[in-house]
Length: 211
Image (cartoon, rainbow, N blue to C red):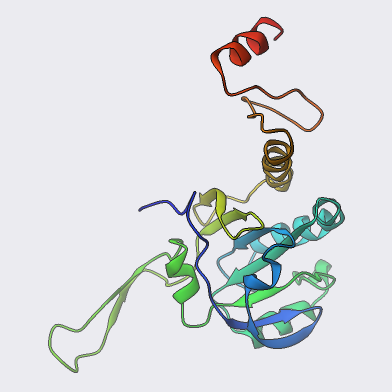
């Protein structure tokens, strides 16, 4: 699978639920030249690991917003399913209280464009024969950090059973913004408040001498 890192994020328009309301023609282009975007996919509504992730991103939403970064979720469920799940309380397995947009990739094209669609769709052996599918056509747990110019700067894809670390997503936002501001790169285990490295041999030697 080829990576999207360093390339323009695929553009789409789709239905979504935003602040509890269903909207049409939602697009990430609304954030161009304004905000960074953390765009993440999850497999299914009304499941087990997924609500823990959606609530975790909601709990950290103020931290992302303080960094001028939008959070947007997406799955292959319908907007009606998203809306229904938003009506269910957290202690009953729902995602009530989540306020960031949740995109409905009902025709699977967004997941496919971002390279996170599990399963495969196969055309019929003869003209007019029905398509068949191998595996469930749902999204892996993909996450993409997109800068203000619409370029993907970080990508992570987990298999279905493996939940993500929201703190790590925040760290990657911090790293990207540190690089954009200072022009210095971020070494292993870098965290907000730590020094970066100048992308020269002298800069690397200086950093290593002090760590």
